[in-house]
Length: 295
Image (cartoon, rainbow, N blue to C red; front, side, top):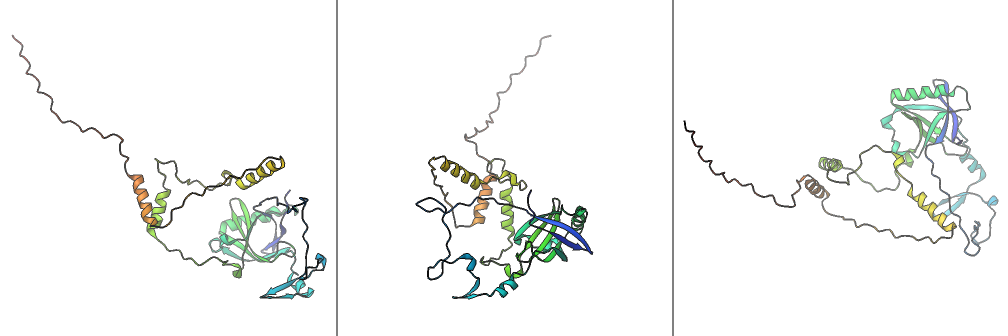
């Protein structure tokens, strides 16, 4: 059975809601070993000082690098930094509107379920789920450390039809990254053309799928390729790497005009391969007068 990343109490109205947090996503990948070229055995990592002398790991210290200088930190300073232990009991700081929580910035996500070791824990978790669902709000916790020595984080609890999810949110100074500034501009023409391209073309087999996202339809080709290569190598087979062809990409030009031309060609009536023969309008010869019957 999977091991909980965190278990503890979330206080609400003086009552403890007993929760356990499990990783929402898991990416398993067996790491490769670094081998020496002669014996093909794993190499060992050796720590050295600036003079090239080997240093025992147990005797190393820690410090902070500022510019070109490195300053060692005393044990008291390290103890002050790392004195935070695993948070066992937390208070809800606020109940924020769902729309105000930038969930796209979440650093980690966890499935929250009742702590199976606590009798009756399901009742409190059901209360929390129903309450967040009804009010359309997220419970925000300030300073939750998921494990001993872990950095305290902002933790947002949200409810949906699948249950409860906890998101580790970044602090203000952690938002931004190194991406260059870019400002989107509203353009009704661009939006209309984009939507028209998504509109299925009955005469084409290359329409975009508009079905709901479903992770089961996608396959991890890297994992499959990796396992195939390992199996072939262990079996003594020659592994041949096929070169990937990069299709040419057209750049430049007015994308709007190109889309409009493409859509116009899509809606234009198809021309017949053979020209239709003109309709004849020749008149039929006049009918002969009927002979009168003799009396």
